[in-house]
Image 1 (cartoon, helix red, strand yellow):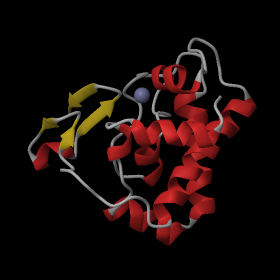
Image 2 (spheres, helix red, strand yellow):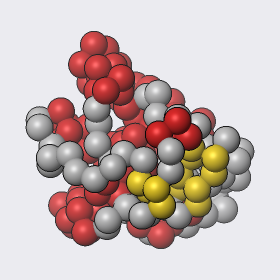
Image 3 (cartoon, protein in one colour):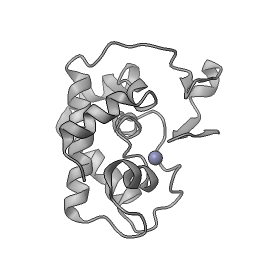
Length: 152
Ligand SMILES: [Zn+2]
């Protein structure tokens, strides 16, 4: 677990992570449901998809869109256990503690709050992930996890 200020500074320096923005349907979802409900979903996702010692489909368990929390997870490297280990120092192969679950939700919350409050300006092509340009129609089913790009 890292200090959140340090973490967010590091995320800003990552070309891949810093490209994610909350917009469109996901931004509307946060606005309509409100932060409390969205964070309750975040906790459920973290508990079900990340917290087990061996999560199902680890590395591919977090879709690219259709929920604001999914976008936040890619933006903050809380998308899978590999990213949690690499970015947050939480080792793979064991279940997350309650404190670690709370930490991950706090990371997601901070990113969502930043985005809600204006966030950095949008830039680049939304179809570009790691400089790989893909047709817009492919983007809906594309999953990305720290360099792993899967066209579904
Ligand atoms: Zn990941």
